[in-house]
Image (cartoon, rainbow, N blue to C red; front, side, top):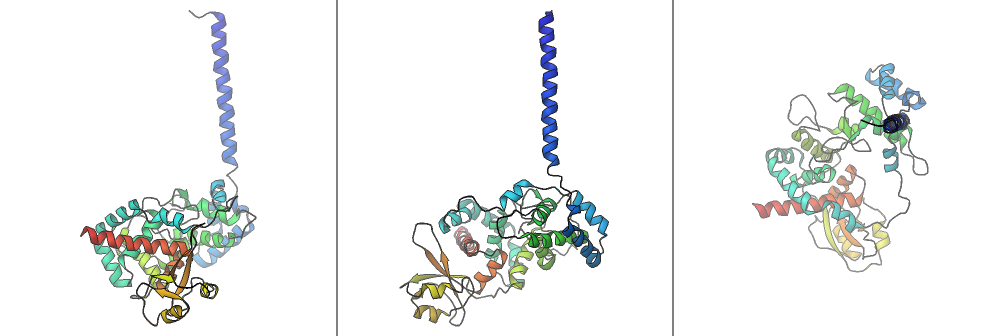
Length: 351
């Protein structure tokens, strides 16, 4: 039998635990409420709703009701902020994230599992199978990481709460939010369920909503474009994107080079990723090509900064430039193309 003191003590502890739990719950609710910004009150949101009604026939009230359910995601705001201390750009570090054994092994498996689809896509669009596989590998590790952020929340956050103190890209995300709502209205996608990257990219190939609308393909001809679950749709869509952006069958992607003298580097690097120089001109200016390129095709000298190590260079052709339309980064394009080469080599060795 408990003494009165122990009984009173236990009752006190019981009620104290309730008070603490209540306080914690209240804090959690308050924290959650901070994410409950009513984006529908934003002037730009109302203008977007009006445009969607005029262009897509979506009632203004429906768009605003949807935006009322969108949440502000502080982690997304943080993700687009520049780092407090800028590191030195390093191609070796970037490369090691994507051209690595696991991604190569899983890429060959993906290629073998979808060999017929990839062969058909290459025949239709002229894009090599290994390049298609490499893009899906870099973007999502062949569908393993398609993103856990609700697309509506990500795009609304970046459209209406883009962080200050850096280049303002809110208009870009506002356009993508508008495209996403239009896309969901036209397709099977549920605007309250679809998930993607923190920036709103969706599916195996991480298409932004506007790219889904413009370039996605119903590869399996089932009447539905599904970049989440249909590998054929995803593969054909990636190939179509590259073809529409100017992929030229038989043209160079990247060509290894030997810099024989560096007195013309400033001039050669000035066009950045835009193919500008013929192989003959590059040779005249001290750049020897150690790979294949057609005599009349244009190339760009690509600089691959390696931190404190010696800078590396590669020549990028028209198709290198096309890959940068997927992600406007020379590091990205070179990683995709190196991965594609590694995939092709591993597949040949296995056969």
